[in-house]
Length: 299
Image (cartoon, rainbow, N blue to C red):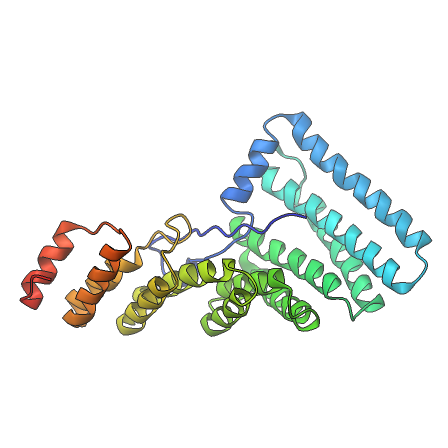
């Protein structure tokens, strides 16, 4: 089972061009590249997926009931999707598969996932697996600049992760991926709701909330909605310290700067300074000098 990796790729670009989560970016892609450092590693990965496809095809033919058959279709769909994903990630460097083959594998994956859902619509697993395929497709469409349908795939992913969570309310992975799907689509309230539900099941949800509020704070700041930005940064701090690899926009420094330079809410700025010190967070001396000057206070 492949673990979801949440890696931000945020720049100072306009909000429309910024995407937060992107499973398979950075850490996941780096892991793939490392694994395929030699041709033998890449070939082994693809061969393993081919074996999974063969095994699942056998299981489809020999299944005793629709539930078993659905599980086999879902497994084969995941194997096709993983071949497409890995081949696409490696394509620029190693030319493992052309775009046409990527599209073919993805279509086969979705066809199998659709069959699995039709055979066993009560299963959370089959919805989750189809959602993961949609999510991976949307993420890779962003990476490789084929943007026309990326939101379509992310919307489809969110719908299926919602279904998976509905059918298995204790599935923290469904809430985790649901939150990332919504975060990718800039649906702040829905993303926060999903991560909050995850937090009730898995401590990872708290870290997701810290990162998500940090990201949405940055988005609001880019849009010049500074009050909303500062409020989001404050929320981020309440859930912990955002990972600087997933949200490189320091919520402490950004929040203090907004309260000092823009909204002139100096008490709030000093509150954030004290929170930063308590958390062991280093702040720019220039930031503190400016706050002291503007507020007329020393602490």
